[in-house]
Length: 428
Image (cartoon, rainbow, N blue to C red; front, side):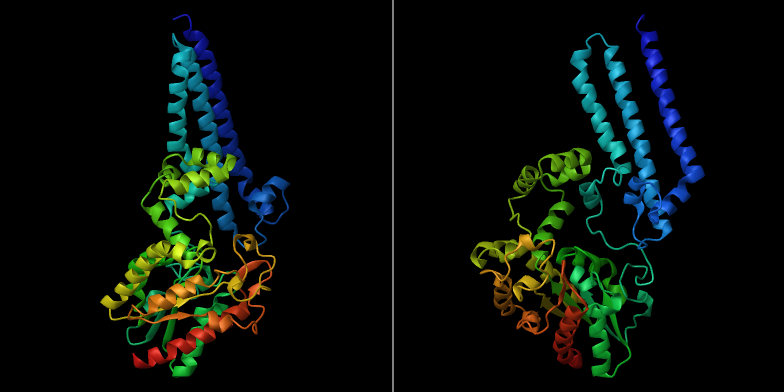
């Protein structure tokens, strides 16, 4: 009983400090929150705020305010977590055998932080793994001038796609989406323009279902959710060289296999482990899900005889998409997109991922060899765009410091795809 007053005083002090901090955060936000975010978004605030909110004018103020609210709740969560730690230590010290109970109490406190604070710390602590596992599909959500309400780029609302029209649906990742180029410069949009002219039809509609870091698995999931709304007559799936690993990774995340389960259950500990020992963490992660190849471009870094088993997940998803089309009597075409390192060593010389692949290496064309064999056993067209880019006449087709196609690269792809699709569409 004599120890209780000693416990009561520090508890009261900690509680008072918590309310003081929370009250200060609320006061600053209510009086100066919007002004601080506005000035920081223009690079006119203190340096650390500028580094957080200055987007170079790319994001509207509403988005900056939403990010600021997430940071604010992160500070609230940190304050509450520190308060919880102080209370935990004080309560343990008041016990008869504090050393015995300290570790179990700290474990309970940490589990509480992981469970209740982590959802509020996603942006503050940059919990990328937590963000990925909570939204594996990561589809574009923000409607804007180039997005419709489904997050489809450069497309009207689905209600404007008529069954009597000619509707083409493109699936793919950032190459299909048109990363770093305008929506109307992306090859799906250009294909639509060329087909309208060649077919003399004004009712050709394009739906670009591509988005950054998508894959056939995620494209199939989006097709299930939104595909019927766009009444497609033809679906074109575009395969990128990163899709092979992405399909494996996204499926492991969706199924919460191995250590991927910790992305959701222990996001902060996962973040710390990855920060302190990234290579060790990566090896443990891959080992926990059957040891798939760790290299991003493994598909072009080894002979086909070694990599062939790892084509299976992607092929399974390709065939699921083909089956979806077959059930609806929708034509399906599979297009294999080349990366610049497979056709011209001069491309993207300063690319941030250039060290991840061998430029014009001995196994660079192995995926195309696989799909040449694969095409003989399926009843839908399988077409490589490598011949359209090979020969180096179209240089440059990519940005100097980024592997994605520039506007010229998209024009090369669009011409080849339009020529491929014309005879198919004339038979529909």
